Length: 158
Image 1 (tube, one colour):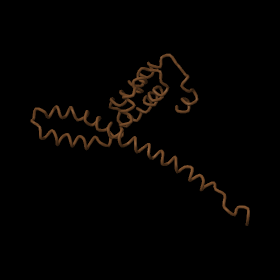
Image 2 (cartoon, rainbow, N blue to C red):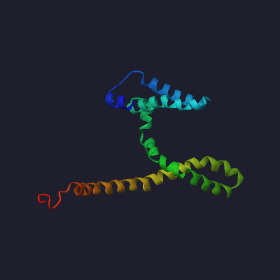
Image 3 (cartoon, rainbow, N blue to C red):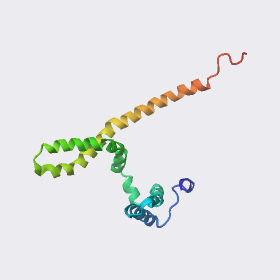
Image 4 (cartoon, helix red, strand yellow):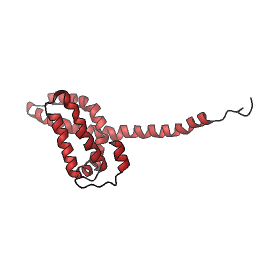
């Protein structure tokens, strides 16, 4: 499917693309929701179609997922994954000290705190670290190619 996408390029504009995207979403949700036991791995079929169609673009869902906010959340998703447990535990400790009426508010506030904290970590830790590593490896690349392709000092002599 990836090879088909690369060969077709993004110039392929078909009518009915929205229908295919929504059918793939429905198929993915149905595959995960139905009690089909070991056959649950069949979810890969509608999910592959969904990824292909979203990569091809041209649907409202593609435009929504390409907004600045969604791209930011996508970048922060690894931070969300790593910080979910610590932030949840920290919020439980904070909520324990509040009156019982605020316990439900603390549960509802946990995802908001997690997302805000994860976006902060992403912007001020992950992105600067990624840029630093990329610059470092870019500067090292010319050095390594010099050593690999350098001619020995006595290359003409035996």
